[in-house]
Length: 404
Image (cartoon, rainbow, N blue to C red; front, side, top):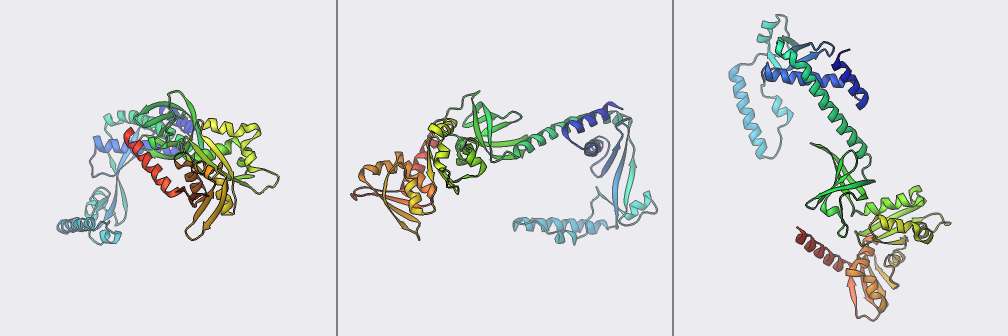
């Protein structure tokens, strides 16, 4: 068994590739190399390579077509160019019908019948001719080296594809990673076989991403780029909170307790709504754990971010009341058509209901899907979740522009 054959078989076993696929790649590469160094652009070259002896054969593959007068062909080519230009101006591509109705001839893959009969007197229209090509001695010596290069390239492609397949299956999940370094506002994360990317907008403002630090990331997307798998990560996504809850709370992982919604101000506070159909289980208590053991672990994973766990209610007024916790609500009046909730709170609860920079009422509104208008019982103070959200967004944009 030759060294090339051994290398191909080893590649197939290690990377789970078929022998035929590797040979096809080698022969395609050899055909391209032959065309470049010994042939011409009008040849449609097919190569047969013997890995045992490194011998090879080459053919120019042509389909026999009708003779076309040069003047007719020239006029057709000019007409085709005009049609393509007109289609481009209209912002469209030519249809197959528009292309096929004009006489056409591709010298790379086709051979007119008059020329074909010079090679084979019995040539017929539609027949595929395999015209033998001469293999020079110098190209024969190049064949083994070319095959070796293709095998190396195939190994790299196989490794990239395997890594891509592994991580594509983890899209939408949590993964552990080690901070490598920061490049501007981007942070590179070592994921073992590949490097992930944490963009600025997916980072938490208060977190420091020091090289060597290990933390959990949410896998937003996995795509194959020109240099291999491209993995976009997040620390600020609300999905990160949801997935960490699944990891740390068995009742959520099993589906006994369900997460009905997550609203997050990354790095500061999250509100998580939970529900269960099992009357024997307290969904909020299950998430907190004995003496706060479960929720404290989650808070630590999120770098100290505060977590409000809320029991989901089908009744919108009751749900909004829960969502505004820790503030105590006096009454809720709903406007179903505008999906607006007018909420009354005691004067000493008003600032608590709004929260720092409007955070509490904004998150409650996001969680419940209702616009919340807050008023105190004295009628002296009022605030809207919409207005506070607009102010928060403006403040965030100002902060980001300063950083840039």
